[in-house]
Amino acid sequence: MAVPRAPQASADLAAFIDHTLLRPDAQPAEVERLCDEARAHAFKAVCVNPLSIPLVSERLAGTPVAPCAVICFPFGADPTAIKTASAEWVVRHGAREVDMVIPIGLLKAGETAAVRDDIAAVKRACGDALLKVIIETCLLTDEEKVLACRLSQEAGADFVKTSTGFAGAGATAEDVALMRRTVGDAMGVKASGGVRTTEDARRMIAAGASRIGASASVAIVGG
Image (cartoon, rainbow, N blue to C red; front, side, top):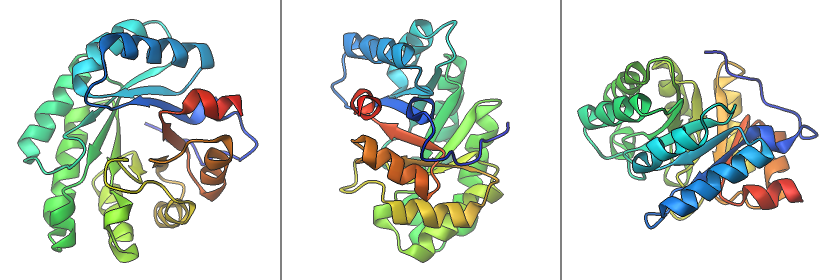
């Protein structure tokens, strides 16, 4: 599936935003409101935990807004078989995009084949759904960020993504630029975690982000 090039900072922000609700205490009424906001503002996707995907898919039926699920979130420390089963489940229940977390400890230990194989297995499980790979930049050195991006690319992922937002720090323009230089135009780059204002979003897009993950989406597009 083709991945769009990084948009210009002057472009319509709503088209690049994954409207996100990943709190563990999120209730169905909040998820419904998230979907309604995404439809009203024409956001690119609604990103939720797996349990909420059936509701999101139903609420967004007939709209261009893509249901998106995170899997094995936020640590990525699950066996590959669990990740693939999760990916298959959310796709079966309507997810058109899947955001996974790499096995961060294995990457830092230099077990590159295991990391690549983990991503590749999830990509196969996604079928036609887009796969975004969260590398959790705040836990990595620059060299490890580059390596994680290259392994994701080799494994066939569609996007690399900066952060879960649950590890103490989120996206930075510097990390987005590094990731964009590493993957070129062949993949999408998603900036997520701590993007709360219009200025934040435009800064990430200028650095090379082709997607923004945010819970403050309405405020972002409202300026």
